[in-house]
Length: 405
Image (tube, rainbow, N blue to C red; front, side, top):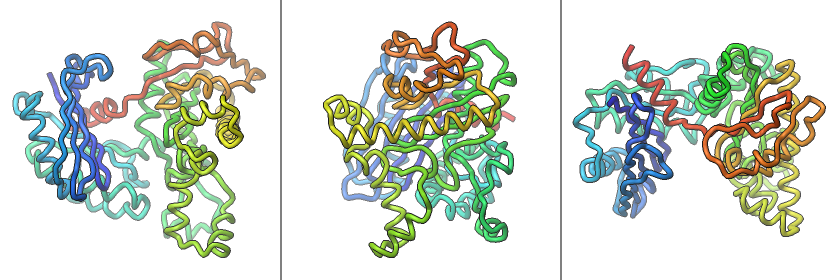
């Protein structure tokens, strides 16, 4: 057994998972949340075989004050000690940390040092909602596991292969360089995992494939991948750009910001909250969950119908753009909560691509199977897959590769 502890930390919570990289199975997982509030919460689940759905051994929950991330790690360590598995024998060989923004400085998983921590802190200017929380988690984890290598795995790293034509915004060059304004892309860990899993499943060389990966969850992004490398992606300087999401607007005319600032006297903070937290499906229909949107659409709700149509319209636009950028597509993969579980979204997203030879098999698409699977017809010119993502496993793989180097 070779365990790696994976940490995904935010400003007031962190998720964790213990992964055996030998078997690539989850051994345990948990969530510590409401850090800094009067009453925090923690849950811890142990798995028999690592199958998170079917093999749950035990789940414990508790509510108690959790002052900060350091206190949260003490709660996590207590849960491991009480419920298992042991973190002492065997000891984790590495701790992998998800960090959202690595800027142009980090293009691969990186062993965390004091200098790396300083860089992550400096990059908080580009990700003020994400990097500070990640840094708090790193500091707390290094205090708890001082004898173990800690590795940062950056969401942006996979997209560092984008050509300048894809990553450059058409604004004044000196201003862009001074403020490091460019497209960075996000969900890179998921896009990397899914594109490699698709190639392995199809038993085709990754280097030969032109792929579009659609990571559709509450946050959503599309990536064009050629030969295993990202060549374009929908998210930009921040995770706000691109597709319509649960609460984020995605693409819009930047002049909208000026209109709202002048007419509603919105501050930069107001605009940020408006576009990130009160837009997208929530803004259009009052619900951010695609399950609610599709149910209300089926009932004839005009707001839900429009929200769904806008979501699909934007999705088709990106798929079409990436067909052009790649010069044709071999594989399209749907992943994440909506991508894996919403057959209507999958069918509608590709309904207009018959001209490119894309054909969805309705029975395969509607089947309640789990795991990676083909949903296109046998004669489809493009293979369409559903590929469950596993970002924790990908982080564990990368952390182990660095720690063992």
